Length: 206
Length: 132
Image 1: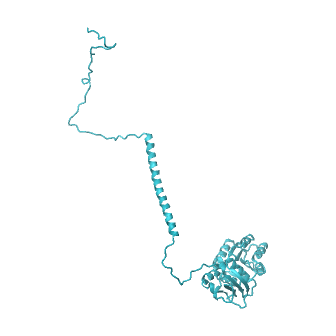
Image 2: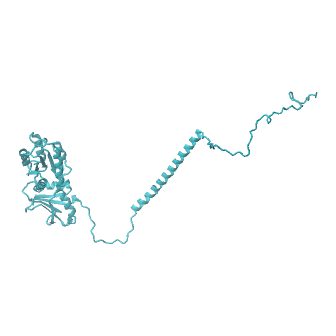
Image 3: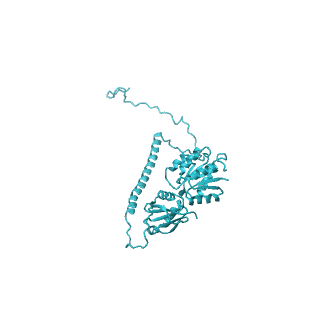
């Protein structure tokens, strides 16, 4: 019997422990492998790692953020184009186009018809009293100015209209306007001897 | 035959309306002022009256008032005609019982005939007084 080593702590011994080998190989059945066996693979199931819900949420937020980002960029570009284009257009509208040496045109510039500036004499050549006043009111309601109402010394047919030289150039406009209210009105010639610019005579039936 | 009474003091206008209504197959009567118009409405009892507003002796609104007060004539449809656009006469005429208010300058005579036809079509045989 060996003497106990006193330098070792309690519970430890200087003698080697007996290790009982565990019988593994002798008891375990190893499957036999046939050398010439065909390799059989029934099916290969791809292993898709399941995405945890937190990652799914992150992915969704990423896609959403990307869409919003793209939209913001597009709208910024569009607004930028509009913003920078508008002043250019305004400038174009305001800036007078440089013209060549001004030429004197013989064609008179058309002046818009101002009905209130056209003064009328309205004369009645019929036996019906009050027609001049009636026609005068109608002319005023159309926007013309009535200067004089009275009776015509001559009996006429239809509604002859005379226009002074000042407004003779606008006779087509004036006549087409008068015909709306007085279908029988016809242009009869240049008005002379009156301070008014037009004369309308109410005649008898044709 | 449908009888139309045109009450208009302007001979040119009344002559024009007379022509076109006759052309369209209406029987036409004319009156040159308000008094004559009222007499003819009472005597001939037209199917419809075209009544001008500005007229001597009695204006169109006065005639309309009397027509609508009379039980014998109140059922006769009356269309007011005028050349004065934008006046308050339109509202007054409609209040007094006119079926329509026409500003002559805004319509062709043919359009006015069509309006008359439409108005007459809206009345039943019993509503429209038969012409005497």
